Image 1 (cartoon, rainbow, N blue to C red):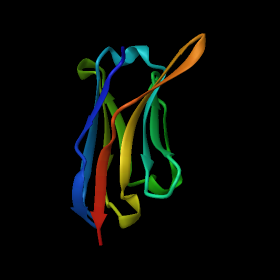
Image 2 (image 1 turned 90 degrees about the horizontal axis):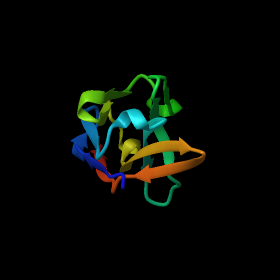
Image 3 (image 1 turned 135 degrees about the vertical axis):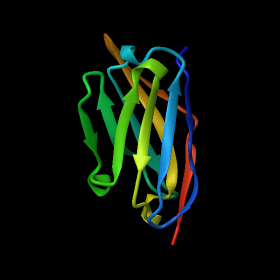
Image 4 (image 1 turned 180 degrees about the horizontal axis):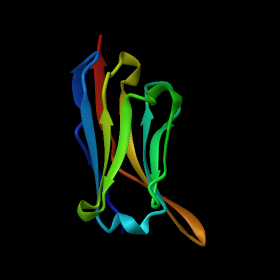
Length: 118
């Protein structure tokens, strides 16, 4: 059973930085992609950033230039470095892993709260 455990959320002022970590229970090499989603109150969950097993990255438009997704294969961990945070970045951030083995399997972490005060 795959487990994803997020950490690194918290309260920060506008313009501040946070780094989220997502530790996987197994080798992240096995996942086709890993990413970070977020969900703000009253809004749908949205993709923030993703990285494929080949290292390709994509970002939601509003975070481009501010957020960076990276991976440490030796530690089976994916990171999201968030700089220049804005109040609209406030949300619960979820780690996601996708495994395609004939069918597409999605795994989720429990979420970590990020709050940006103005």
